[in-house]
Length: 94
Image (cartoon, rainbow, N blue to C red; front, side):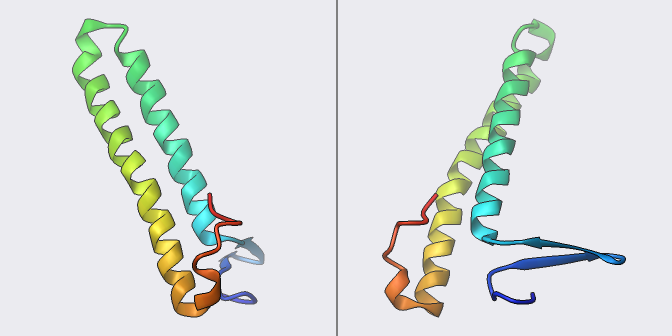
């Protein structure tokens, strides 16, 4: 991690990808995955032969819905450790 302690820097050969706001990025990726599980599950419900797989996709999506508040809680705990005065601020909550 370079620069800001909360940034994630990935190096791929001579290229560098810097992800700022790691917790927000994780939350966005999780939300996209939830949507994909539910869309796939919905499509699979159109055929009786794939209904069971669709049900499993809905279950996985539901578990990921639980992950979102856990990401937010982790962020608050982390902020509380590094900057106690910022841990109650919700201005950048997502």
